[in-house]
Length: 112
Length: 112
Image: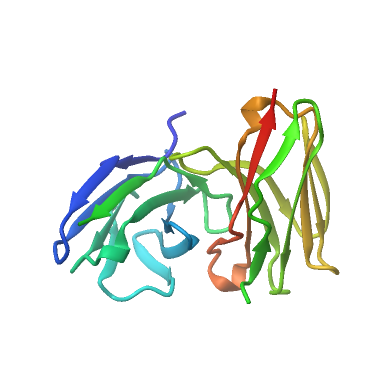
């Protein structure tokens, strides 16, 4: 069974640009979660999508947004990039909202 | 004060020794407790998942949860060099939308 996949693996942007990160959950999983792992800050919850709806949001500004598609894949958009947005962005999926979260390999975003 | 505290290490042990890891937390609403292993530049891999208090064993891994003390532990028996990684504890509460709150991670080095 394929795990959570994310693309691209690496992304380099300049300050002020927009970044789009993609995630495909494990087949059959309906919940998708996004986390940011920045150096020195640890893993922090960003967003949770279930059945196409945003269910919960972490303490991040509105320029972090996303969506979940009918096939349960998800997109994270980061607008007006800032240098401190440089981090590993991790996507996780679960079978249902109460289920265990399984992580993908992440997208490493570098903002110059 | 962080919701979940975890000693950053590094924790260095000889091959074959028992690795002992722990986390403390302050939020009594946490119900689900997890341990993830993360190799450098990779996504976290789920090791153990426990609901509420008690012990759980899986192969060389034993997880313990003491909700009265707000303390969780992970023990790795017969440690191998391949166990060298960062170990992250994570917790969630259904009322908080199942977002995972992570400890900062403990770096473990198993020396041959």
